Image (cartoon, rainbow, N blue to C red; front, side, top):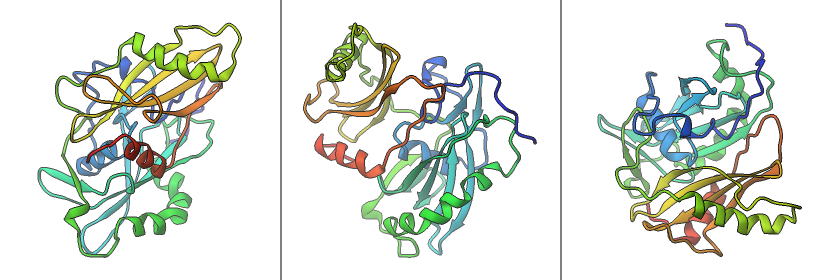
Length: 278
């Protein structure tokens, strides 16, 4: 299908807009044919939501398989960014009928590719064509970090139950608006903005949960048209280390398309500082 130029002003947050547009108890499910690879992607990439969102509805994430090694590892491209800018390469170590297995924090690489088109209405092989150069450039680095063509090593795995949407279990602590504003205000003090609001919070969401119940949160705030995304690691009760528990992921003046990526090693270092357990 021919690409359709977007006639709307698209705010393309990393891998889509906030989940607040959906009923979080019944999120948009994946309807594609690679549920095991989908599960790998959404639990590997911290801020993956699991669907493409365009403001009024959603589409399933897109997956393209590049290759498999002799032990069954799969290297694939993944996209859930309706803004058609943020893409990932991901490696799944293995899967069975119930679970997927992968190496955390080293099994994905992100890229940001500028685009004036939305993802809707693209040709069938769009993801392959869009990420081929990225794949050719990064595949060897990703393979090396994931023991490509070496015997499987279960000691490095984490596992997740195969699913059609991202879930964390019950009674996961979510930061209040007041807590988010407090965290945002501590950061905005460093920006020296005039007449800055003391309530910049716009939304927040849970991204990941570790084996002991620590929680990785994302907080989005706007202060004088300054767009801010902070990630915070708390314990089960919402307590966090003010020195090491907050990382700035995006902080910039307003633009029509807001997309950002990050290096997995940065997230690994952040988690290690906060005692994250896999």
